Image 1 (cartoon, rainbow, N blue to C red):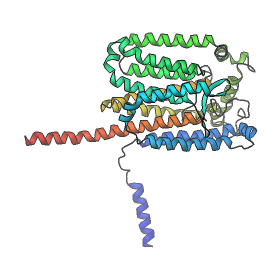
Image 2: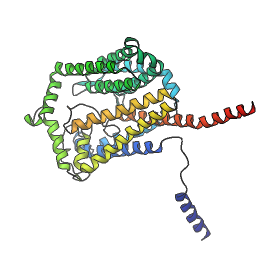
Image 3: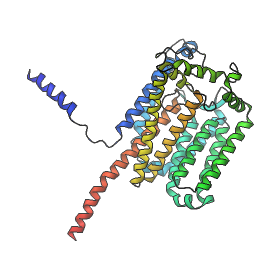
Image 4: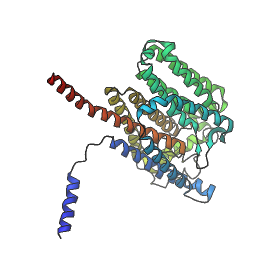
Length: 403
C-alpha cells in the first residue's frame, strides 16, 4: 500500500511540477514532428493504389518514406551538434560541393519524366537541387555577415556578387530543367538581401529583372507555356494539358468541410498523377476537408513564424549569421509552401515542388529536417548568449566595485 501511495504522489507531483527551462525551442520540435507524422500518414494513404500497381505491395512507399524519416531524424540529430561558427567557416566549401553535385547530375543523373534531377545512391536518389538551396542560403548568410556594409552602400561590390553566384547555380539547375527551384532560391535570396538593408531601388530593379527572366524562360519552353495556359483555363482541355489541375480541383471540391475520411479519396485511385509527391495536399484536402487543410497550414506557418522569431532574437543577441540564416529558412519554407499549395489549388502554375516535411521524397525530407535542426541550433546558441550576458554584467559590476 505504501508503494502505491508513493507512486500516486510521484505521479501527481510529475503533473504539477513545471518543466525545467530548456535551452532549445521545444515547440519547434513538436511542430516539425507533427508535420513529419502527418506526411507519413498522408503519403501512406495517397500512395496505396500506385504502390499496389507498381510493386504488388500496398505499403511500399510507406516503408520507403518511413526509412527517409529515420534518415532525416538521424541527420538532423547529427547536424544539431555542429556549432554555427563551423557553418560560417565552411559555407564556401558547401556551396562548391553543390556546384559539383549539380554538374554530376547533368553528366550522369537519373532521368524521370524527362528531367535529370537525381543521382542514384542505392538507398535513395539524391536530388542535388535540395542541397543547393540550403548551401546557397548558408553562403548568403555568411556573405551578408562579412559584406554587410558593402551590400548597403555599393551596388556592384556588395549586391551583384551574390547575384552572380546565384546565376551560375540557376544555369546548372535550368539544365536539368528545374525552374521551380530557381524561383524559390531567387525569392529567398532577394528576401535575405532586403533584410540585410539593400537599397530599395536596387532590390526593385533586380526583382523586375528576375521576373522578366522567369517570364522569358517560360516563353522559351513549350511545356512551360502549356502549364501557364492550363493554369488560366484548366477546363479548356480537361483531358490534356489541364488534366492534372482539374483532378486536383475535383479533390478539393469533394473535401468540403470535414473531408471524405482518411483513406477514402477517389482522386488518388490513379486519377490524380503524382498524388503522393507534388499533389499530396490535394489528397489531404479531399480526405480531411477544409478543417484538415487549415490545421496543416497552421502547423507549417507556425514553423515559419518560429523561424522568424528565432532570427529576430539572434539579431538582438548580435548573432548575425544565425539571424540571416533563420530568416532565409523561414522565407524558403513559406514560399515553397505557397507554391505547392497554390499549384494544387489552381492559384499558380503547376511546379514540381514538395510540401515541406510532408511530401514523399528522401532528399527534400532530409534537407528540410536538417534546416529545422539548424534553426534549433541557432535558437540554442542565442539562448546561451542571452544567459551569459547577466553573468558578464555581474562580473563587470564586481570589478567596478573593487576598483
